[in-house]
Length: 310
Image (cartoon, rainbow, N blue to C red; front, top):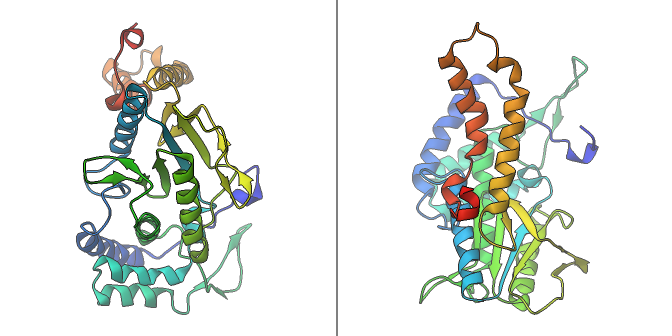
């Protein structure tokens, strides 16, 4: 690890506790999936990164085709759910979670003690009064609900998004804490960014200003988006959920990057391809898993053009 600030502590739980948490998680998902906003795809059945990337590509392509201005702000939180204030667990009640399950989760943190393993030695137990457990099955989904609540509150006016249908606007696309805010104008994006930051901060989530990037399409306003008097960087391209979105639209940059990464993966396994001890069937399976999967990640979202085919 090159930077201490990137350190994340992992909580190790007993096997019975993991099994119990799995049961709770399954029951929570059954209760909560309906109230979660459609814009949120993280940790949801039949939803994936591909859905969000494909939607964003369509939005960008239509913006360029119709010569319509578009601002996309890719929000990055500092340490994500490792920083989440435990008091936000009360938001579960807003997602139709049975009171019994809410109380069980609350009680699991009441009087919580941890020990640290370092150099093969175990420290004395100490009380943990804040944050949720990283490494717990419940934590990612609990964090998703908190992020969904943040976006629900910050976009409640529905005045600063892009026109999606005749009656509705689309304010954002989310995959857990990977947020892409959408607006047509500089003023709208500035207000939305400030609103998300203001609602996030009191519950322990702070926007990482250096990692938050802004992508603009067909905009006349050259002024930057700011947060707490700090300028958010404008970029020409951004890797969103593993796929490249750039100011030119299309998929050329992403395809070229995929080809390069697949070539690297193939060469790293060069000692696998030549030996005759391995059967062709095994080599094909290794190729499909380690090379083909890298090459075709996100291929469902590509717009196939003559240049890409070549």
